[in-house]
Length: 98
Length: 164
Image (cartoon, one colour):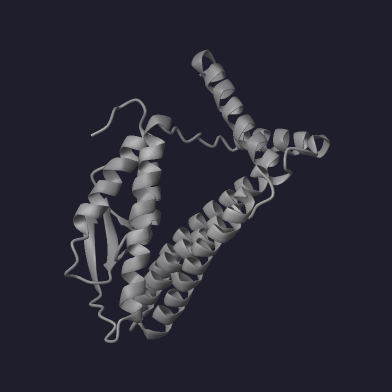
């Protein structure tokens, strides 16, 4: 019974995550400059991935898998936040040169 | 240096041992210790050789911080998704500066990384105690969010000096 319920519930965050991924990609295409595009990618994708991980955690077979998903999300969050900052710095320095 | 250096190193060793042990347990689903123990010990020795400073978190402040941060992240992603899907795609980007008030390097590092997940802000780096920020919409009140995040990070990372 709980398994069936969790299975059904997991679709909510999974669908939400996909929507945020789609919105982030649309922002990447529509926003006017590098920095605005970085906003769209970092914020929407980090949350989108978090929601997908949460949805998958509802379907996980054991608590270990839940912990692994959490660990993966934390790593993606850290790398996304850091990479976004480095890309912004690099783009700005190149702008200063040109 | 030998006087109080030794117990300090002992605490650091215990900290890394617990952290890397927990990491191995999660990755290997609580098994494989025959292979895991040598790697955990090697990682602890390497951390001590590089004299990495353990991050001191105030654990009591952690749940409140996580809740606060998740709320902000949700707000940030919602805001940027709304702008991306809006028919006229309303953005008015600008560069601004934020003078930092905390002086811990750990706080600076985390703040400039995490600020990129807040609604409408993104850091490109810190120069002379001023964080360079790109804002998606210059009309948006971003100062309050950044200041609140800085205050909460300082509170989370300084168990000795006390908050505020």
